[in-house]
Image 1 (tube, rainbow, N blue to C red):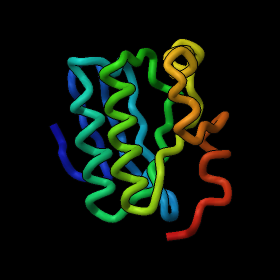
Image 2 (cartoon, helix red, strand yellow):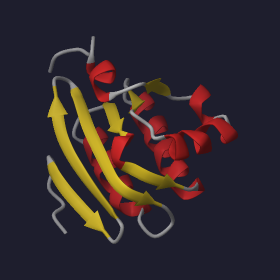
Image 3 (cartoon, rainbow, N blue to C red):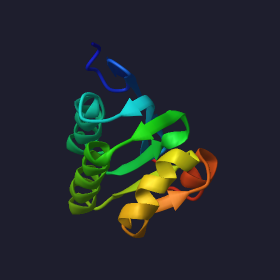
Image 4 (cartoon, rainbow, N blue to C red):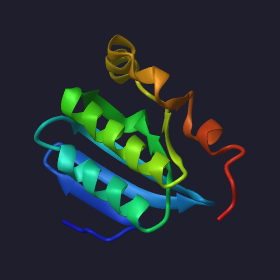
Length: 126
């Protein structure tokens, strides 16, 4: 597994790509986010904040499933990013993933965007 940032990681049914766009770290999980794959997303999110990238944009357009463990990873990243002066922006959620956020009320604590382009629009430059 490649642990470098930017770059990608893979754990079973989930791959995670990280790239930079201005002051934002764009983190793109692809596949299923659950108990077995959560660390593959947690690690790059935490690393981005540790390296000073506190504006995290999670491109959810390739995320096919998210359970409560995955939701907790994103909530934890949100707390760390906010304590560093940033935040977590979720973009392009598929209906099956959006439903988890709606049911739990988590949409109220994240900035949710229709797509990646809108999440990056107006973001500060690096």
